[in-house]
Figure 1 (cartoon, rainbow, N blue to C red):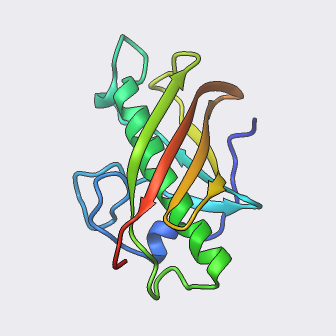
Figure 2: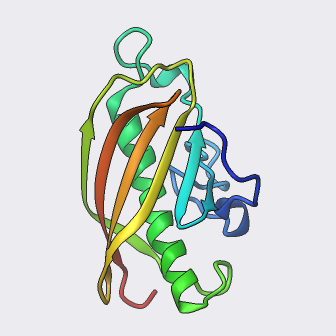
Length: 153
């Protein structure tokens, strides 16, 4: 899997929020950036050195956090795309209902992670997102995230 993605605008630059994972308005956050690449939402994220677990390895909780936030953006952006809603003009809020991460290989703290996600099932308020985490061509983790659109949003 290549580590390059489309150079189009990151969704988080279109809709600026306070979220820990993606919020441009949160100076202490992870500041992930998600971009469409075909039918997948792709995120390339370099773990900062302080997200280390075992020597040289990314802390698994940090991977789960990045997956969680990227999956929420995937659900929201897919909803907007399918409904013809501009992201910055009334995108609904989604929250995590369930997050399941399967770690396949340790991820190095020295290389960026690439997350590739897409909605695999969608109901009235719930969307299930499948996400794969790659690093230097190696699949490090897979995840399934059930997202829920908040009422009134």
